[in-house]
Length: 209
Image (cartoon, rainbow, N blue to C red; front, side, top):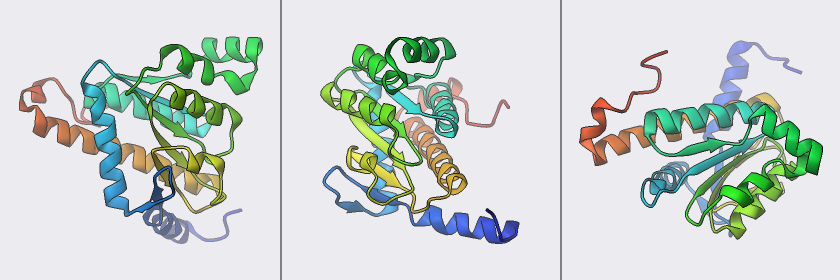
């Protein structure tokens, strides 16, 4: 329950965003700028060799996944997939169980060198955890976004793990959305610097809507 006013709420949100912890699979801590830079570089690494970024999440995290996918392919110009079509989700849920809805397409489509972005507020959703393990078997690079408990299992599975120290869904989801926007916006800037001729082909987020 929100007890403070809007100003207090937003102040708390800003404090939490700046306290996001970034770790690698061994638990080593990066400062926020260094971790974010590594994540952007990881996303841009798919430009070579026909690789792609896959993004998964449930509920509000799924909405973030869809938005990030759109920004990555439309603005950054890299291949990006979000496994969230209603036909696919309902078919796989009905036939195999909801815990398999991301794992099965990743087993089919993931290749070595792809990047998986796994978003889960709790860090405990079974379908997300199973998908990450499937991506690891396929030798994908993995970025995770989680929150709630500091020892949530998802936080230990990525090459880069962004953890929001809060058990409030709204704070965690907005922080995840903010970082997703940063990754896309920063990737656009870096890609434009690397390949100046794409300036007529790549639009900046927000220019056309």
